[in-house]
Image (cartoon, rainbow, N blue to C red; front, side, top):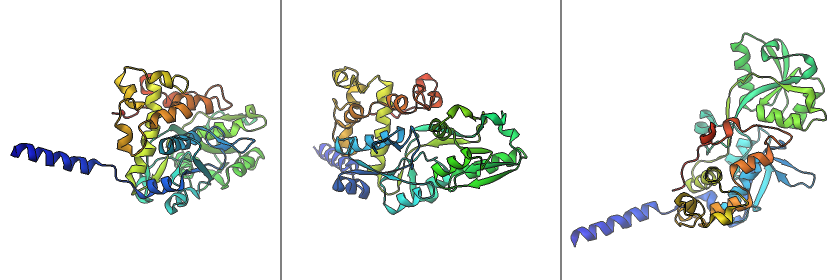
Length: 338
């Protein structure tokens, strides 16, 4: 009997210690009724408004997923467009709840800004774009060139490092706003324009004659892009992380926006946990058990989001590459929902 009492006390303590502890950001979001997302000011395929002012893109789909998890409604989010220099201050100050602005995860940003990188939703590299009629085939031909670049980014540092390592010189033309830096490049104020290769493809797709510009083959750096949150709210951190992992897991197990209702009948225990047929995962997050179902029903899985926004049948024409599932040679490997 004494052993039984001790066991019951121990179980009670474990339950108390593992109960969801609501954090300040999580509570504030619940109270105001929407997620405030910090995004790019307009990067086609990732975060940009259409002709009706509706924001779409790979990063916007992340915002929709967070809203679906928190409220069961993927429309309950608002967008705060931010420049590269504004983004971290906006998150630190509480102006936004999460930053989904094609931001590179680095050690410095993860350890010195009071912020946390959550996951990588796009593996990228920095590249450089030139006019096709320049005849330039390699970045190593750009010695002495003027290069358009945005301030407040890892891009500036990577550019300087790469040119120095290759014993080349360049003159930076630093312009803060995305549309203005692209405009300067098109107008001929600089010989080349550098940013993440996904950003180059996005900017090129929006130009009047995109085929007049080429992205050179060199990769200047690793650029793992993904959402950031403030430190100090593990529950909100978990919502952001697992919302993304749910989209990845859904793709891995063949759960799509079209078949998600049919998949509720699946006998696969992994699918049952993802869709909330087997309860517990939602409780652990402090949200509805159908949180992942709500994401997939409204937004789709990661592969669907990728192909819809930036895939080979879009103006960006991007292949999955490193952003394919781990089972297909990519780096997308979700932690298991169990």
